[in-house]
Image (tube, rainbow, N blue to C red; front, side, top):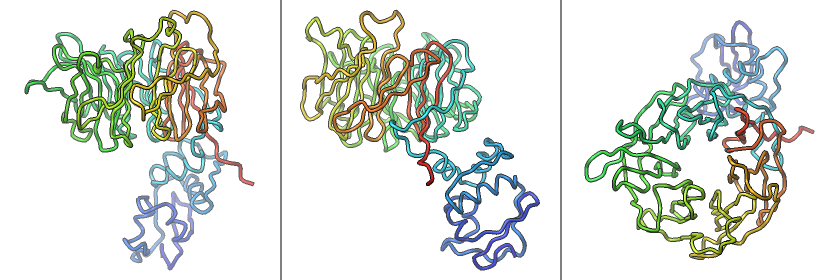
Length: 441
């Protein structure tokens, strides 16, 4: 019998395997092996012969050993990509990833590999997916890579410049683009990451009429809302809000004089504050505006701007911003990698600047790569020139630096799953950094 007591026999591609129900239970209820159990996790007993599976037996042996021991070893005769595909079939991909890579830790990240882009020209943005894949923006094209770093069919917006991209989940990407005057094209759409198919567009309505608009910065909330900065032809300047499941418009926050929303460079949803961080940065605007928007009252509950700052404030021009909810602060960075911190508990507070490492002095290049910020758990990441600095601890002390000599300056980077992706500006290439699991003693 295929199942006798706690013992289970398989015939995989002509090779026989025997294991226990306890080992198979390690795969989880939603796996292929979970189908062998009933709702009470009792083995089904109506199987009278070996359970035949027409798959690769070499890969099955590796995955079965992973379920037995928690260790992941790939023999020389097994293709890594074939093994990943088999893990996907059996529903144990998460087990493979957990065994192969540890939890992302900026101080333990190691360079893994680089991927050359498939499009002419340089990429402008990179976005990591939740499961360790990514997408790269090239003008009107978005090139999508799965977690094995195989490229899917690209998403082509037909000469509409892409402004931002974001992953709803590992299979769905939202893309924002410029509206082409007189065509009605542009705005924002949800695409299938694997096929590049447009699933639906997000429309903006004003006075019961659908409007053409340019969509910019993106962010998502935990209750399935999509936020994007919007610029229309008449009155629809502000932040649009949609249901990410249906694509229907939920709300629209109109900008008022002195409170720019339609040109926002950075949006970030803060679950703990139930607010939206909206930032318009230099050089898009002559001045920087950062605010927290209360989506219920549609008013800013926290606000900061560099309007009226001293003339020598130029060297402190804010290039990126990120809110750190655990520290009740907003972090900003200037072109010299100086970090500034503002207390979210104080309205219109001042910036406490902290000089970290001035890699660049004097005038910036004609086409500079401005520093970017990212947050993962309690660690802060900041790009500068061709490296990424990691800051840890309550005082954000620099603890490590990620750098490669090939590719030139980093124009963008992103963290997703257990990987960090760094996109270079001078070569059409992006690097992948991973955290290896601790050594087995």
